[in-house]
Length: 368
Image (cartoon, rainbow, N blue to C red; front, side, top):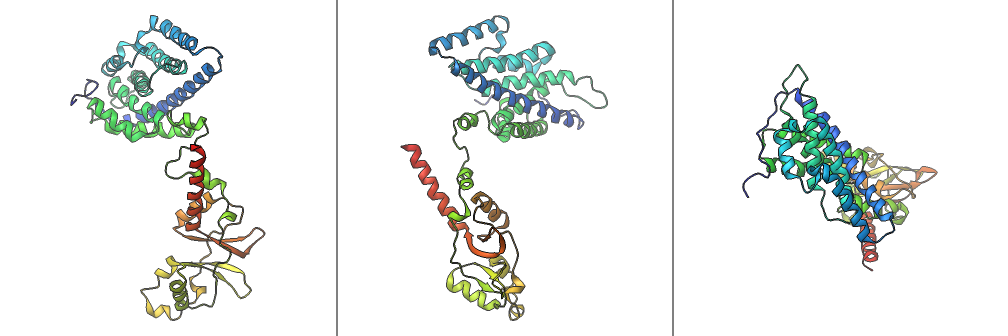
């Protein structure tokens, strides 16, 4: 409905000096997020390696959960009630209990999913973040020199930061937590901690808690552009060897005429010895089109640029990245042992055509 999921006090930034503390909290949140992901999938591997009936695996998991629940029932279920209590008054639990709750939630969630139980990872991430943030907030209360917000504020920020670290989706974490609590006044600390947590977790673990399962199966998780395909292909797969070239003495008007008649927007330039010098393309031509006086005296030698060239064994991902950075649709291909010997060109059209062809073949193999 219109009410926030958690009824908490309205927190705000007590002083700008606190921003450094929220940076540190983001660092810890990123580390906790990585620890959660690693323990989760390690626990799954352990249960998968146990060669017994799945009912017995579930029984083992249930037994472990029951034993822990006898002493710390707070870690059972989604834990929204405990989260709200931590957000409003982390001090009622204390440093030791909050530390224990954070660790136990990681272990119990991993055991539940590893043993075949049903459960998600979003609510546990909120729980861990609240416990971590509350613990951190209690520990920094005694710092002098600048104002410190109550531990509940750090619990709130910790929730969003751990979610950002586990999901690798900081914007989502920021928006969800602000909406769930109605605390817009603390948006700046949330943003800072979420970004830092996301950066830390990505540096340590490339996949999020959701995509790691696909990565472990050998599936590509690239959206819209499968880099693995381009990485496997080589320049030799798409080279255009019978490309048109021009000489250093070719006039500007002749270059324009060739572009119009051949529908080619870039040419390799050779000197009198037949050696490759560089490329001339639309970026160089477009700069001169408005100045007719200069055009009369320009030759190819005045426009040629010596950019990046490639050899036959280079992968197409490297070529594609160079095209994207330099906004070029055509790049030269030279001999492995002689960078002045032109053997062809590689175009964006041919790169993408081959990429799409390989992508169709790959999808066809997966559906068989």
